[in-house]
Amino acid sequence: MQFLGAINVPYAIAAAIGALSSGSLRSVLLLVVGLANLSQFLKDLHAHRQGRWTRRLTFITVVDGAFALVCLALVALLW
Image 1 (cartoon, helix red, strand yellow):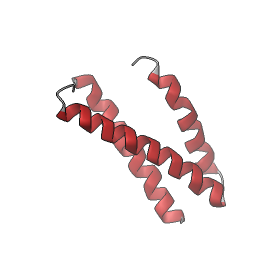
Image 2 (cartoon, rainbow, N blue to C red):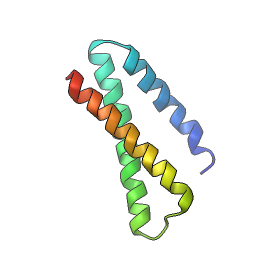
Image 3 (cartoon, rainbow, N blue to C red):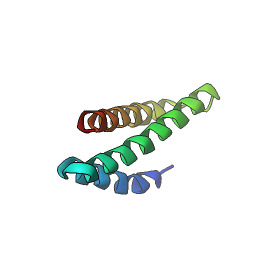
């Protein structure tokens, strides 16, 4: 688990580029980042239902859900 932060760095960079870019590049990058975080959010919820939930995962789940929501909302507004 401790190495997953490094995996998320490219997503954060893609989101920043997407937010600062214009046109279709912005939409595509924000869509990719939003879907990546949405899939992780769904896996977090699955872990909760399977009894593998820990208090530490609460923050991660909230961040995954919020980031997905913001990115996908921006895509919807820009489309």
